[in-house]
Length: 384
Image (tube, rainbow, N blue to C red; front, side, top):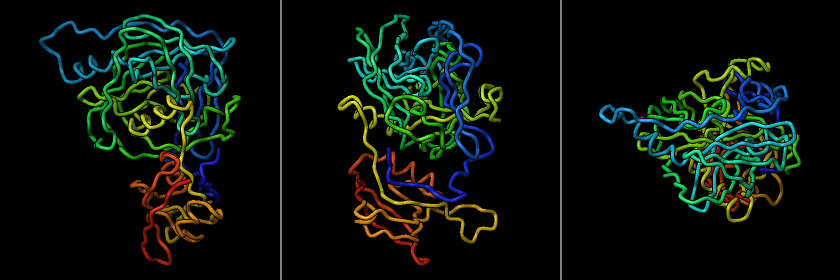
């Protein structure tokens, strides 16, 4: 799927840090039988676990034994956990578990695409959903979005508790961040930390790779909230919650210190990532309405701009070519322009421009800041 931003050049693949970003659907050892997708610091890679039947996910409700010593984390977890489910996906001999967030009383559940496709191995996996009260329901896949790694699953059940969604645009670094989900199949797990970064861009393996879904890309670029709340394989699709018990993100990936299959399954190292709920809500609503989601197209090829930096630090995305008739062409952008902001998102390299463009809906009007001949300029662009 063409997003309208093509990154080229030797520095276009440089990623944050020296670790690997891992889509965290399947558990190391506990939930073998699927694939754990990873992205190395240079190029995306898929790291596959050995095939074996997944163990049954354990059901454990959030328990409060002493009402006199309830703290803010307890209260937030009690509020949000009723809206977090455990999702089991299976196809043939492969299977694994992830998490999901109940959006409405009609049974629409927001999760990651890599959860319901077994990391891209299966386009039509069998889905079961366990709710917070321990009940198990068959699920159907309403639609998936490979560019955002999001999906909607639906169940038919009474008494569902829709999640209270927060405003991820108001998240501050240092805010309390609570992760709720089923790491390693342990449902109802609550971990606590802070928001470590509010506007991080990562590149992670496409959950459509190797499946019969529509995207043929090896990797995707997404904007995320970074947190040090413990996130492990199985937390994917689960909730990142603020101190008020509002959902602020959909847990999607973790960082690994290495890129080998053994390192990739070492678990949490305090660097986890969640898709901001404002972005996820927009994609989820489009999938519910039409079965798929739209993404903006700019219509440019870009490289990382590191001119004047001896260390290679990048300061924007330099346009190398503009597609005739595209949104960029209509707005008057030209080859040589260095884009530094799009839609309120700071752009320091080609990957950040790709992510900022993709998180917008098709037809969205966004402000673009760029440098031309040393002069800062701005223009409004209606994305294709």
